[in-house]
Image 1 (tube, rainbow, N blue to C red):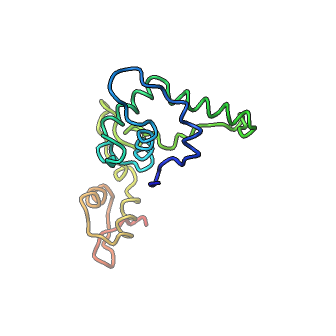
Image 2 (image 1 turned 45 degrees about the vertical axis):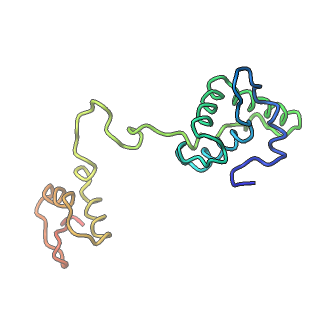
Image 3 (image 1 turned 180 degrees about the vertical axis):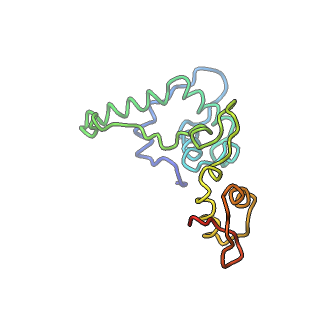
Length: 168
């Protein structure tokens, strides 16, 4: 069994929960396709990098989207929850789905929102941080360093020959 794949016991719990073929053509095996989906989700690789042992990446990708849209994954989760609840293994007060892989918007990461006016960065509003970071990095003066240094009043030379904030 390859990395990220379902064990036989895990597959036995799931195999009856997926849809049967209702149209022409031959579907890829559900287990192989599901293992391909899990490989992508666990590895974080792009769909095109899916190993060939799981079938064509487009087939796995389209089945993933179909199952997501038609509620197959929701039905599988609900069936597993019911099974675990009957066994007394779920505390519904503590049940949750981990959302740690939900991508935040660019604005949440500090990027400027569309249409927002351009402002000076954090270095202009907090020049001490820039000077501190530059001294710790022991790097040459960067354009950010010089911009913030000019914004300060009466800079004095440091022993190393670099200009520093007189308030430090």
